[in-house]
Picture (cartoon, rainbow, N blue to C red):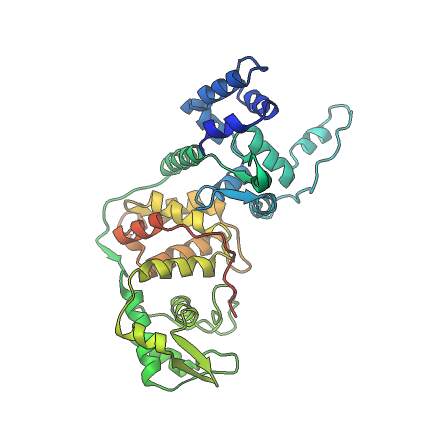
Amino acid sequence: MNLSDMLGYADIQQLSRIADVYRCECNGHSKNDLIQSILSTVSRNDVFEAQISSMKLEDLRFLNSLLFEARSSFSLEDLLARVQQSRFGEEAVKTEPDPPKKTKKTKKNAAAAETPLSPREMIAKFKHHGWLFNGFSGPSRYLFQVPNDLKIRFRDTLAKRFAADLQYTDEPPVYRDEQMLVHDDITHLLHYTYHNEVQLTADGSMYKRFILQLLDQFGVQEELPAKGAWRFGYGRHFNQYPNRLSLVYDYCYFNKYISENQAVLSVTGTGEERLHSRPPGEAEHIYRFWLKIYKGPITHLLSLVHWINALAGEWVTVESLRKVLVPFIKPYYYDDANTILEQRIMTMMVHLGLLRLGEHPLYGTVVRMTKAGRAVVSGISLEETGPLALR
């Protein structure tokens, strides 16, 4: 539903709160006057952009987590978790608001006023702005929705704001484009496994010599993980395999193309079928699988990919993208926000054929979405089913 529909279902108390936020001048006792005044005010671009400009970073992160979801409704528990995930090591968050106290205004009280809102206060704030609404009947009363037209306006307004800070360039003299290579290397993995007795270690990973032989056949060369390096969170054998091989291996394993039986890796009947012909829509399936694997460590992965898709329609510098997107990336153990953006997101998008990576003589590293990448990202939204269990 759009904002006008949701305002029509809202009670006069909520309408009055929204009208107060936007300083609407109208008859506060008339529901119709309130609705018309709110719609008239919110439709003004200067008012809408001013509201976004006044939002704190944690507000923007929370909003960002809602803008690209395919589903329309969110439970209170889900929203509370999203607020918590939008705070990256900032001052500890109180769980409930303190009761008001009558005290003199002091510097201490002014500092207290800057204390972050509790998750429930944050959700209430979004309701008072008309950005979140409760359902109106039955079980939906306990679910929250963002008006569809506001989602579009938020995305468009933020895109313009982000784009203003980006450095766009002409086409670099050289660039990498790995479209189709991941499909070929799935075939190479299955072909190698089918024609060789690939032995597994006690933890289920391939022995080093098999990994090296397999990598030698791949279209994209990778180095083995450094000895003793801290690696976890992005795949079943991520600590033993390079990033791209780990994803290709897990994709084959979870699609039952390969099986780990009695310390030997083997190709299944389904894998033999894939070996002889690539199924339709495989690019979308691999993209969807990558999101499921990486969305656990990277909590806002879906929105970050959509922002890269929206902002990198032309060649743009990685440095300027970093300045815009890094504030929305939560560090994950040994991976800081820059590492996550460049290695876990953009480099993997290159491997998936979604993104081109080039070197510009004046501007350094630049990227641009591929035509196929724009189609894949724009056409698919991952349902919120939770991170994939890697067992």
